[in-house]
Length: 541
Image (cartoon, rainbow, N blue to C red; front, side, top):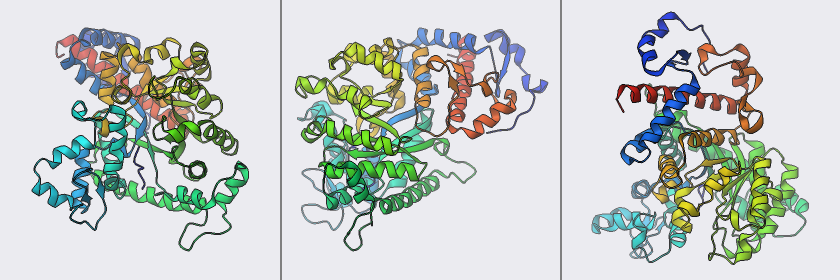
């Protein structure tokens, strides 16, 4: 089950002909500077004009939405691949693949089908309302009509549509990146399980002992394995890399990436995080962790690890500190592998008060997380102000998922800690979490940040920048200095646009993928802000 059910350009001097129309544009936006392929005023001036326009339209949903959709957004760092797919796609794939459906539980299963689990295609033909019932059962649509609470309804969806995602890796990737491009994202980190359960099975066979070093060796080089089973986790890694190869090839074919008119999603950079299922027995959790670090060490596309499944699950709660100890050890063996952990996806009443007091701090201090997913209960932690200052000092980014925090935990508006994180200087980035299940996308998350949290244009822009600064993508970044406000020396004098880029900056960007993505984001912001300033001044907006 690959998707577990949770969840460059040369340089040339700017020519005179490139500036045709400059005088007209100057009358609109002020003094000129050549930025990439668009003319723009000095960046600060254009940014100010864009921010001023944003303040004028922020209370009008019909003007705010197209502004936010057009705005560059950097990266989505918290995205569960299986949960990112809309139910309608799963229904289409399941129908094509001959999957069966339980008409009571609305869960899919592989063929052969029977009277109690008819083929989905025939069931849809016979029952005109089945399509809508499936969409409601596989997502948060119409959740107000469900007898289940938001938390249970959300997590129950994954077991129902899981069979449709397991053989559709390339289709899943294609849908995600195409939608990301439509929302002006450049980069996505996807949580998935390309091992089809192989790591869990290895853990089950090996069993548990508390010597983490010895247990890791047993998992990598087992003494005895059944016929046909992988000989250790490194063979599972090899098989998983093949699955990634095949899925990415399918994605490129679906999007026409080698054709004259490729889908914009072809240009979205993708990296992977292996998601460890934290509610399983310790032997299986640890085997998945070892696999995740080994995969990242072997394949540059895999950049990190995360723990998933409900944080309030009894086994996840009981073994939380053991899981942190596992990560603490494995971080010493694989120090370059990124660690981003779900922590603080909790609220009062969901768990006893004592369970709200330490998950975020322990995930950072013991689990070595440099990013935290959700972090909703931060003010319930012991010494919350000290924790906030420590997160800022350590430069730990919090992945903010406003829609899922609302629908799963009921945390929204003034009750959400997003503005508290900003007040204490903790870096944050908006993310989708499970956009298909939530019936959302990254544009909706940005709109929520404005309408629900009252954020400014400059705060949105800083979050987009932070998403790439804290991405686990390879290479050094574009920014240095306190809070990333100064460009690295090779690019310090280069403004956005390849025509004005120094040779040293071009070399730096060629050598560092992260910096290349960040420079592309700055160019996109320059284009966006110049367009907003021009259209706002001319009355087109």
